[in-house]
Length: 543
Image (tube, rainbow, N blue to C red):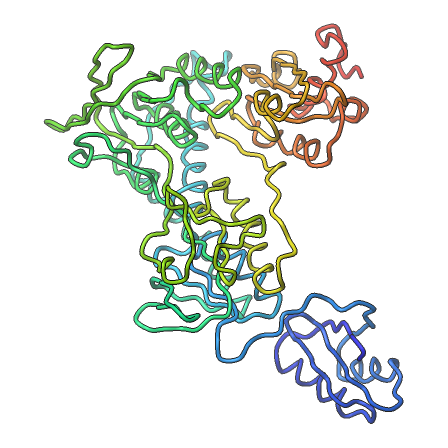
């Protein structure tokens, strides 16, 4: 059997043309041509040279080369969908695209707006609102313009209208146009539910499938606060459609969503109070960073209450009140609007998991192994529904891995060790790798340094010196274990640190590298240098 890599095929008709060209040759018993994979298997009998095969393909109008090793190729099944994907967000589309590239026939089922949480209710609209708020607020931070520029409020209805226009364009470009580019993917706008025997209910009908990937995502979690259900409140699902600028926005939850949206509305002109039951804001982050971020937010005018017990909520005369217990003292906090930002819950109910033996944990998240495989070997899962890192980039990688493993066998694993994350406040808080406490718990002898951004020339020049960077290092090998940044553009700077963690680089590797000057990313090298010397005594650009 001869294996050929064929370039230039764009449809099944192309594959048929190549097949006929090869099978017309004397000495060719059968030719199997796989269009999506650009691959052919030629079974010969008698004497025929590979040059003759290659020449026949070229005469048919296609470029071709001999393959020494068999590529990973999925052979489609007849009469069923090769892959059923429940969920049309980032993880779902990544799974569908990868499966289609392997030659599979794919069905994507989504009962909400195409594009999932990130595009419609998460990353995209939130960063749009944050950037708008920061643009309006920036002149206030410039000491030369403070007395000469007055920033007024915005027309929030126009803000929402423009957001919808932007999302409509992105849905077309990133999803609908993608479907047109992959004819092997079929999309149905309806609800999907697993049935027994390799079947699923899709809308009012039934389909058969070979393998499946669950990417149903998550929804805002609502805490069991007394009388909360009687109160008018927003979540991250609907706050971006608000038709007025809140006079006083109460935010329950001081994680990423609460902090980002709280500051955005503060900068747009609302009074904002953050209410958090945990001892501090952004509680999963390094203490030095979250403490500094809190200080800066309070300096900006945000009221922050942490370590409280929320007793109940009620609404009267258009005002919303939240009763809390703080240090044994009862407080009543009143506002005009309420945002509940207390985490997320998986969309795993009523999709037939019990029918197919897919296990979930106590919180309803689907349990998967390192290959994204569930307790049912034919079904995989990815994205927010699996209780890993709830990040759109992670969901996309998980979806792709899940699809490939489902079709070709469990060969790829998901690596979470060097995945960065960020909170898009201003300054931004970004992190990758181990935190100091985590490193110690894993048995490392740890050394750390903290560098103030007041030591970074570019931060000083741009009036952005209110931040710090913390580096966590294995003291024995001087290998970088974690980098944690609070600064303007920290979400951009952190990508330099990702490679340090992913490839196990050491302090000397960073110190010996050359940065552009002046840049904010130079902060990583300066922090590495601080393990060896006093950086306050270095001249500009000194190594």
